[in-house]
Amino acid sequence: MHDYLAIQPEVQAALKAGRPVVALESTLISHGLPSPTNVETALAIEATVRERGAVPATIAVLDGRIRVGLDQEDIARLAESGRGKGGIRKVSRRDLPLVLAQGADGATTVAATMIAADLAGIAVFATGGIGGVHRGVETTLDISADLEELATTSVAVVCAGAKAILDLPKTLEYLETKGVPVIGFGTDRFPAFYATAMGLPVDARCDTAAEVARVLHAKWRLNLDGGVLVAVPIPEAAALDAQVVEDAVRQAVAQANDRDIKGKDLTPFLLRRLEELTGGASLAANRALLLNNAAVAADVAAAYTRLRVETALPRRPPSSKRPLY
Ligand code: PSU
Ligand code: MN
Image (cartoon, rainbow, N blue to C red; front, side, top):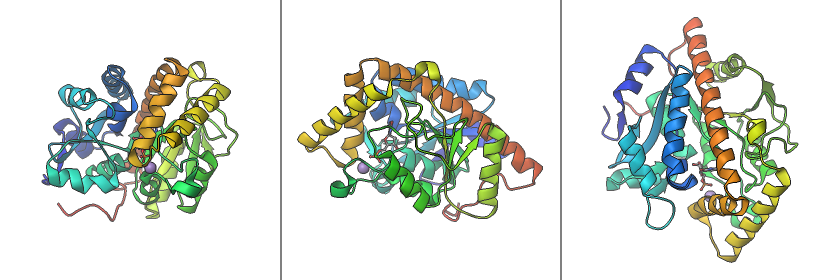
């Protein structure tokens, strides 16, 4: 085992046997959701992945090692450090070498979780929302490292689209420039996290996990390194009113500007304000879409695993970035 990477034995065994594994991120535990919803939700996501016949691998940095697959104690440790002030570090691509060198703990963003999943050989990853191009990018240049990671790292990211705290048209433009296919799962329109329809088209619609698996197969068979974004609409019953969300977003963005909140603190600040502004409603919606995405990701992982066996492909998608170990 590499000094910097520790894969949980259950996850390692599943990968070795070619069974489906779903990677899960930890920034949503430490910075995205309030306590105690965060622990409960993280465990419920893992349970959903298991119910659908896949092995969950929640990813974080603990004591200076990238850990792929966590136990309940680890998850509690990530959760209790809480959001904001002096809490656990939010780790994206830039931060990984820093926390590893310091022997510190960190919650991994979509970008850092993709890197870890790729190192471990996990092809499918479930989360809530990805980072993207922020509103006001013209003056701030704030573009999440998640987008650049999707451009280069060969992992499929199953999400509920992106939150309207972002500039969604610009986020999709960026993904197009970087060659990242955006699939609508059972939809022709890019979902906007809490709200289902925002009118922006996706690149392709897939109605089954098997169809998604064929896209992954085609992309990586051609050595077109990079991710695929699978956007799953929030279940209808859990969706919030689009106008209510938009009003809350405008308020939250204005407050962030007033208080000069930027950089890695911006996304957690906006998420927290949005939650306060919409009342508990946004939390319930968040939980519902996370579980839904986990189920879809487990199905995609199973379908992709089957396809690779049928076509005698190696278990892992190709990647030029894996270290030699
Ligand atoms: N969007 C959400 N919930 C989240 C995040 C984004 O709706 O919890 C987290 C994810 O971990 C994502 C990160 O990778 O925020 C993006 O942060 P930044 O914009 O600083 O790259
Ligand atoms: Mn940013």
